[in-house]
Length: 180
Image (cartoon, rainbow, N blue to C red; front, side):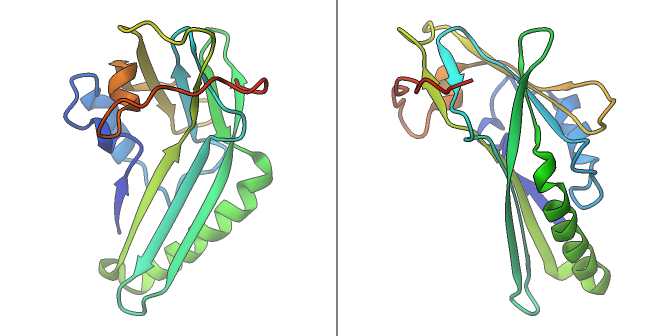
């Protein structure tokens, strides 16, 4: 099955992308990964936070021979690591639902892997604390694919403006009181 990892696609031409991290991520099958093993770590600059509940992992697949589609969204729970970064993991309440979707897609692949395509993405909504980030502020993203494994770099020191840009820079909205 072919998968498009969307979380970092928007930065593919960026010098902040860590090729070894991307290669390591591409070696992991979204269908075989234990939901408890997947983790995303963000190092955010001062003046930026992530809105509570906005971190979502999305998994979708389609069979072209039958036009069957499965789409699932899973909340990523947040915690603070000892180094101050924010860590996001699939909320344990979503583990069974994600495993069921993985099993369905594996079943489709076993019938004919050439007709099954899919996508995996992580989305987050950022907000501004106080005056917001400095103009030269950066964001770093690391991932892990094993619960007890190390986090490896995917994006290193990417300019906040580049990460948040969607055709043009939209200023961050002020954070609600519940932002991470």
